[in-house]
Amino acid sequence: MAPKQNKKQPKVIIFTTPTCGWCKRAMKYFSANHVKFSSVDVSKDPRAARDMQRMSGQMGVPVIKIGSTVIVGFDRSRIDQLLSLNAKEMLN
Image 1 (tube, rainbow, N blue to C red):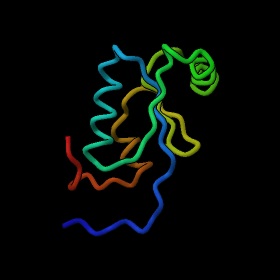
Image 2: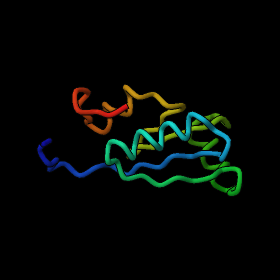
Image 3: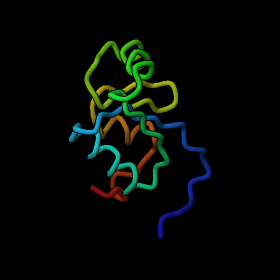
């Protein structure tokens, strides 16, 4: 059994579209690793799409915001680093 983390998880937001395969992989990865997250469908929310573009400089998804850090794409190693996930305990 893995020890409980005392450190509070930073806020995680993923900007997605319904047809984005990498978005689905990222959300599945978060769920499998017990990472709480919010998802925002930018295809239905023009304001969120503008915010995402301002943050990332991109219109492509996924854009993942962990705390104040913005990640473009599903960069698993960067996500693991920011969330302090242990590579030996992670699920694919």
